[in-house]
Amino acid sequence: MSPTAEQRDEYITIIAPTANEAMAQFKARGLAAQGFAIAGRIGRHQFTLVGGEDAQELFSGAGMIAATFCRRVAI
Picture 1 (cartoon, helix red, strand yellow):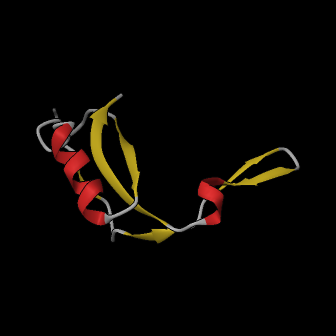
Picture 2 (cartoon, rainbow, N blue to C red):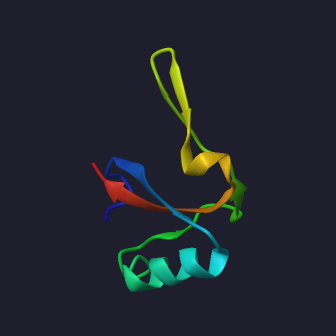
């Protein structure tokens, strides 16, 4: 990719019960070979899906591990 080409970040977040399971999925999907790298710390999150004025707790409000990966791609 040329340094002058327009680029954007592309993200994938894997949600799993444990960090080991999230990283196993990263490996199983071949994300490193596709240019993805960890974007930040892996940690326990609670998730809420919001649509308009409605909000729904996902995973029954239980904390799940979220691991976000990023790569730069040409536009």
